[in-house]
Image (tube, rainbow, N blue to C red):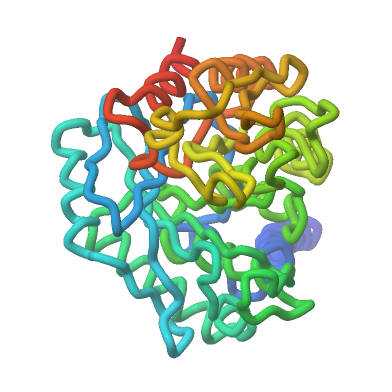
Length: 361
């Protein structure tokens, strides 16, 4: 009887100890009291890789076009902003966001996310600096997801630890970005999407930690340079100065993000030499240009325009270069492609059709 009692006591002790250990491990992994679960008490889990293909369009609050829902799987509405008290989110043109969400009535599988941030959009560093601000911000993300019937949140902080865009920055931003994403995941739950936009250089983020939290990452593979160099080349050629798409993808994977959680960004605009052409030119206006000759870089797999002196005046994308990018990213087992931004395309939808065809073939 004594031996039997001892065995029972040991069994109770083991069960209690195991339960405590699991709780302790989860707290160590996500921070004390933090969890990625949607239901209180649910064991937080790693957000798994997904094989479904993605064609994602960024849609701006200041444009008038409505996206062709037959040619996209996801829409990131731009932008939300960190509010002045660092405690929540303000949304640019709420009425337009609601009209975009209404497209889900026509295509139930369509996913609509609010993208928070953008170039020169600040207050991220201050907001992410304290636990209280992070919790309040995450709670407001949850409110917005529920109120607007959204499918998730996309963060476009450009960039943690960097003040290049004229915003505040701190050496702690990288760590605080991860804590913020953990808090948002905890708040919105595992069933909603959580994504972020990443610099082509794959700097600024702890991808190993974030890989367990996010559904996918949008690589901003553009704006890396300007004439005479390409700003969105697929492969490195003599006209690539900073980075190419295949190098960017490799860096993201090397730094800990699964290929199946990577979405390659494609620009629907080009960069001009600022002498004969503006720095930024939408594709719909590029095709109207005269006095230039189109050339093709068969190594980088992108077009460019030269002026009458043979100088490179514009670097950009067309349907041909997009086809090469889509073929490549599928070979590399990426999730898909995204583009900035929808209204830059021509009236015929040349580029958006090229993306859809290239990914969904």
